[in-house]
Structure formats: C-alpha cells, structure tokens
Picture (cartoon, rainbow, N blue to C red):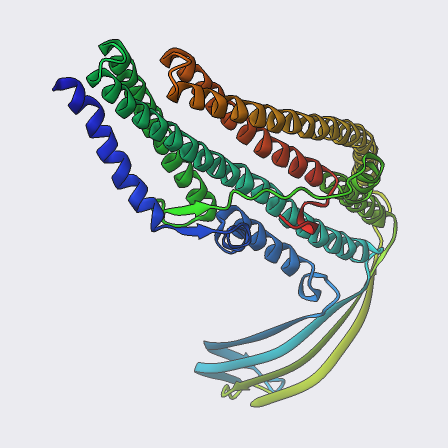
Length: 442
C-alpha cells in the first residue's frame, strides 16, 4: 500500500502539470525577439544613452550659435547736498533723490576659436554614431542571451516529452509484469523492478518539469514580463545554409561590433588631438549691445534734472594665448599618446576577433558533426528498442535487458536534443562575431 501511494502521487501531479501545459500558448522565436526588443531593460537603457549622445551632437551643443543676454537694473539714491557757487552763495539740498534705470541686450558670438569647436562637434558626431553601435551591441548580446535561454526551454520541453514517453513505457511494463505474475509466468521480482523504475521515471520527469519552469522564469526575466507567464517554446531548429569560413572571416573584419567601436574611439581621439592644437591659435569674438539708460535728479544743484540715452555698441576682440606655461603642449602630447594606445588596442582586438571567429567556426562544425552522429545513434537505439520490445513481449529477453534498451533510447534522445541546440547556439555565436546575427532568420 505504501509503495502504491509513493508512485501514484507523482503520477497525479504529472497529469495535472501536463494538462496545464497543454493549454499554454506557443511563444514563437519572432514573438520572443519582438518582446525582447520592446521590453528588455538593458536595451531601453542603451537607447536612452543614445538619445543623450544625440542631444550632445546637436547644433544646440556645438558652440556655433551666439549667446544672447538680457540685463536690467535700477537704483534710488537720496543725499543731503551743500554746494557753493562762484558768486560765493551757498546752496543746500536736503533729501535730494536720484533715480537711475538701465536695460540692455548683449550678443556674443565667437567667430574663430582655433578650430576647437569644429573638431569638438565632429567628436560629438562620432560619439553619437558610436552610441548607435553600442545599442546594436546590446541588442546582439540580448538576442544571444534570449536564444540561449529560449533553446534551453525548448530542450527541456523535448526532454520532458521523452521522459513522459519513458514513464508511459514503464507503466505498460508494470501492467504486463502484473499480468504475467498473476498467470505464473514470472516472479514478483519483475513487478517490484517495474515499480522501482516507474518511481525513478516519475522523479526524473518531475525534476525536468521543475527545471523547465525555472528556465521559463529566466526567459521571462530577459523579456521583462510577468515571471509567472507560462508558454511553450518552438522546438524547431533551422540552420543557416551555405556558411563558409572564408566568408565569415571577411564579414567579421568588416562588421564585427568590437572592431567598429574601437574604430570610432580612434576617430574621437584623433579629433581630440586636433582640438587640443587650438591652443596655438587666436580666438576672435564679436560683441554687440543695445542699451537704454535713464537717470533723474531733483537736486537744485544738479545741472540736468533728467537724462535718457539709448544706443548700439559693437566690438570685435582678439585673444591669443602666446604661452600658457606649457599646459597646452603637455595636453597635446598626452592626447597623442592616447591615440597611439587606441591603435595598439585596435591591433589587439583584430587578433582577438580573428581568434574568436576561427574558434567559433571550429565549434560550429564540430557541433554539426556531433549532431549528425547523435541522430544516427538515436536511430540505432530506436531500432534496437523496437526489436527488444517485440522480444520482451514474446518472453525472449529479461526485464533488465528491456530496461537497458529503454534507458539507451532515452539517453540517445536526450543527447540528440542537447546536440541540436548546442549546434544552433554555436552557429548564433559565430554569426554574432561575424556581425551577421541580426541579418539571419532564427
């Protein structure tokens, strides 16, 4: 009675879980990509960073526009004044009040600053383009992460189905063993062995389903959606046809994101070198002012009681820092050294990318070969199990031999599933290195 409850309870749980899974919606690869591009938090952060760099590269941040400043002021002054005229008479003014008002609009524009803003503006433009590449890099990494988890869900889905089939086979075996025991064709040991195998298969199936639910939560995290969302993954795997090592190597030299990013870094540093040289050139500015001034004075000693003036003032100024103590020369030297470091870094990344693409190609071709071998092995084990099953029904093989053939088939199914998704992930990693990940059909 205790043994019966031990394996009957897991079967009840398995049936309830299987029924729930049958009602789940299939999440296609295209839908998963759309959800990731729309909802993934890392991609959203990268896009916001791109907006900041676009704002920095706009004309409003270039220094090419003039500055306009408005000024206004007013003052009131009360004084007790005593004055002596040329005739010798003395006059006094107690509480004489003087009011002054002014307003002006000042315009300042830099005509020439030694080309500093010109190269700084180009540097901002390069940074904006680099930020766009960083968004693409984030999308590539997210897509690769997405399919790493997605194909794990698909693999566990296939494994769960295979384990369900194995459990069904074990249940049929238990029924057959019980019938044979009732008719005296075997001993009770065969029944006990069948019960133990059912319990083992039930536990394996429960563990596989738990792993599947955990991996679904990982995928929901990548998609930035409710972690409790349930779905079925598409287990179909299509490989990109016609891939060749030489083409992948050439594509990597042109389209690899790391190489493109370091190229932008070099351009930015080059513009910084040119901008730093602006310290050797003068700065020419234009200033214009339109002003209004008014003053009133009720003192009897004042020559004018009220005075109002308006006018326009314009000026051109030139500033040339002939020597700044050597700070400018030091800055130029340091920026040049930074550019040399960028050149060295580029050479290092070129070597790393070449290594990565060759390693990825070897991993990809090896994974395809392993997949081919595992598919043949699966077919062999399937045929072996079918023959063993027929002979077991005829009583020509023992239950131990039947169980071994069943386990061999199950292991072959799991190995073939693992090889299939490993080969696909190896292909995606190679496509990412070559810069073609976003240009293929998943």
